[in-house]
Amino acid sequence: MKTVTLSALLLTSTVLFSAAIDGEKLAQEQCTSCHLVSSNSDKLTNGKMGGPPMWGVMKKVKQHFDTKEEGIAFIIDYTMEPSKEKMLFPAATREYFGVMPALKGKITPEEMSAIAKYLYGSTRDASTY
Image (cartoon, rainbow, N blue to C red):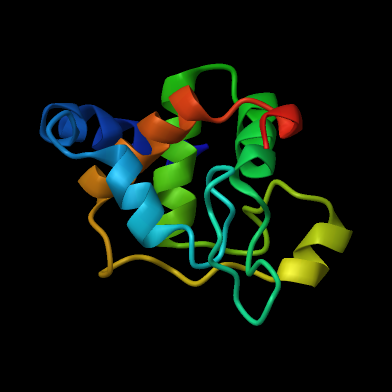
């Protein structure tokens, strides 16, 4: 809970900065090497996804967090410092994909916030892919 609260504080302090960042463009650049971000995503590692499709990730986030702000704070926290304990997926999914690599130092929290906001608005459910 402390992590989510700290991340929420971080999110609040970065809202103004992330407004000017293009979340869709960043999602395509940063996420599609492992995740299907949209129906147009075609980058796969060795013919298989390196991570679950983004609609599945966002479905789990929306199921676990009551507000968009809490979900965005979780996404920022998880992508910066991922761990098996933080994963929202069941054991079989964790075993198949493993824990994602940390993005800390590769992307800023402001950029991750912009990506998360974009994903909240763009991902729907499996029927859109």
